[in-house]
Image (cartoon, rainbow, N blue to C red; front, side):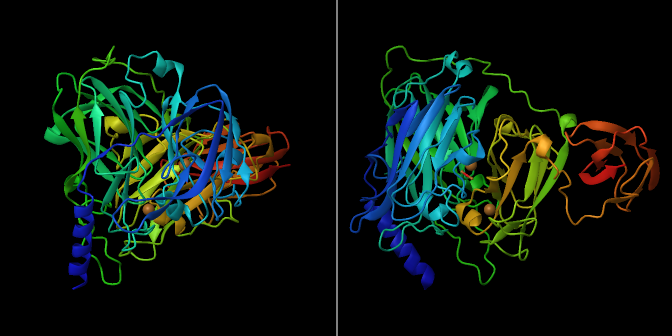
Length: 565
Ligand code: C2O
Ligand code: CU
Ligand code: CU
């Protein structure tokens, strides 16, 4: 009975929005000074009741597209005109922790916040959205989000479509659930209203040439498997944080919440034709939200949205005539990404995605069994540290993992090299149920011992429920916290303090590899291969002071502090 009611309700909604609407293109703001005013607004998405929204500036939903130029010092003035506390986070942008806009940077109602930073990012598509403690879903789902386009010299030198709104289009896709009073539901998992740039049932008039689309999945939970009708091929040219080395000719790009991709479709010679940007969700694996619905264990709320596991339209494209000076071919080489070599890593961290039981599908979910705590610092990372993060999803559902401050390169998914579309700079990656994935990154430029950066699941409901952690990046001179890995008994050593000989005992279950001794700056002052349980090292040559002794095996690094007398 319950199911019938739901279906009737949905069919009413679908009928009411059957008219086509021209795709809304947000206005742009050009720097170096930007003003953003987050305010309460409303939109008539459906007949009957208006939907209450949040928006920036003159928009009624979403905000202007911010154009940043790499190397430029910018000032942003964010005013909070809501009746609620908020924050604004520059997703994917490499800024100091105090200007990152995480949950530690609250803007009280009526107040403003003035981040200022130099744009250090590569040309790509980023975005901004609130990151308020436990309210990110509610505020973002109401419409408080916008796109950021970074331009740089490398990208500008390439012949690519970049006329905003003419041959280069923002495509902000959100899947939403509205209640019977037409209000967005932050925890709605029966979402079936697709908004593209705040437009229901959109069409886009596009010119008959190379057309660039900046796809952003700004949904609360749904992943999309984008493609075009007839399996038309297109080029993916950028991932989250920059250009790919070469255009990747493909028919699909899968984007989980928070992920971006820039794609180019060749509409040359197609004047008068109509194609559709689709989500081929029938091809998503089970456990990816939006894919075929799993049978629900008793006690879990329904996740059976009518668009789960089916292929559906996102955007109709009506191909018109060519513009003057159209781009009709694209370069075969875009840039040269230089992933950090794995041998350069100083540390490995393992982050398991966990839940209270193996049957949990709607949360809460955790990292390493613990829920986010604003008062706790999870990791202290030395500046310039190159790290491998290993993500292991032990839950039933897929989670898009996002980290602030840095872009990363995926090393492997389940031991295999990633798809070419994922070989560039990334700041969000989807980790399906049962998978493990390793990425490598480097914590450059910004230290702050007080304000942390965040890492979290970008399914907003999971994030708000505590699937989040934080880290501070510390100057090596101030750094005393290398010994991160707690509660693990990988090895022991004695005496401490030590003057001449250090005896090291490796516990059973650890594959042997090497022992390093690092000074306070993190520099390696001693190194030895180790292949027995018990070894002794002569440390008489070391200067007196604090050192770190580090066990490196092929899957982890454990570091502890000792004093040389
Ligand atoms: Cu898009 Cu921490 O967020
Ligand atoms: Cu972010
Ligand atoms: Cu999650």
